[in-house]
Length: 184
Image 1 (tube, rainbow, N blue to C red):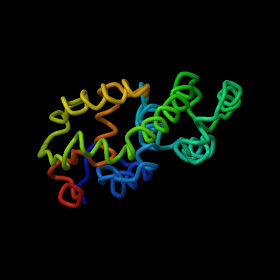
Image 2: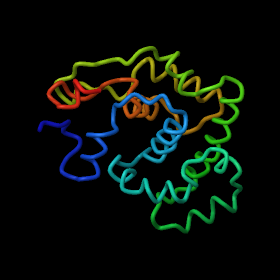
Image 3: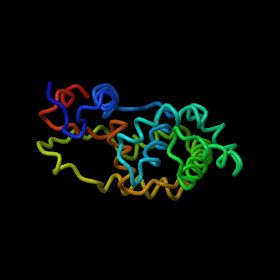
Image 4: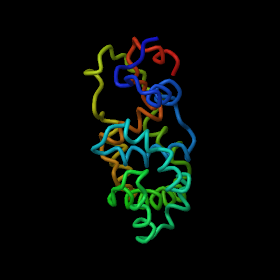
């Protein structure tokens, strides 16, 4: 079975690739989780984030935006002592800011997922044959990044936003040789 080369041999990466990556997400909670995880990825490999995902889920109250938005500095500091997560104050604080921004955005605009799908449009099915062809960002990711930043989100630069778009299935960046290409 042929997969995208970035997956490698790690069983968790394989499962993520085969079951999640690139599947269109219309659920706000799942999209919020991806947004938080992609923020934690900044400067790290996705493999690291994926291996810390369950610990992050536990430490961040199941990625519940209402609970995270209520965190104060003491809550951030208490999570810094958890060796199972990515212990980065900036990223933890960004998760809190993003939860607050998400709640504010949802109050003003309704569903974040619906809003982003409206901005992005239908799934863009790319036809890349080599990993080198896949861009780090796109004009759509840059536009969405600007919208998110104006709404108060952080760690949502164009590259992180494009990673979110890939993970949440706004674009199909599986290589055409990958068995998942025609499935998502």
